[in-house]
Image (cartoon, rainbow, N blue to C red; front, side, top):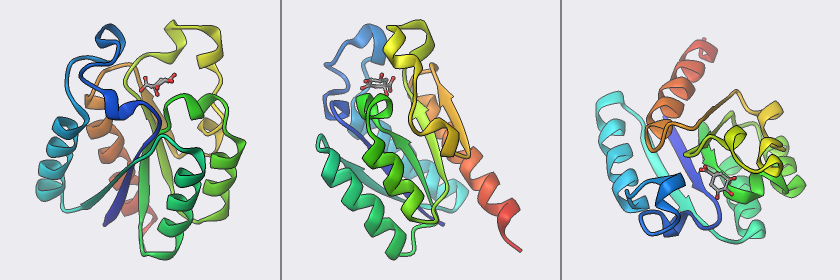
Length: 148
Ligand code: DQA
């Protein structure tokens, strides 16, 4: 399986950014772990991080055309605001698992709303970087059950 790992705004700052909420591991370190998980679980991760809403929309459209089987997405603050990113997922036939490092329900009330949760196959949050591993395993299970 070819899996898009989609990282939204400010996630390039992981490691330095609000470690109380997001921990001290960098995005590169998290991606190395995903790379290793891909080798053991038999999927090919393709990584994309952007701070720009339109670039994320374009990448989702591209995934709809390039044989991508599914996506694990941490959309950062766009989770709570972006109808355009929601619509981009609805425009392609790619299952998405939503992940968040922090527990968005324990924070400001505006983080409790997600514009993607109801179109995602599942959501995992609040456990730190392990959410990517859990999200990927859940997505793979979903893809295998869907396959004939
Ligand atoms: C986040 C939670 C969002 O509310 C926030 O804007 C982020 C990161 C998380 O991984 O916990 O940028 O998606």
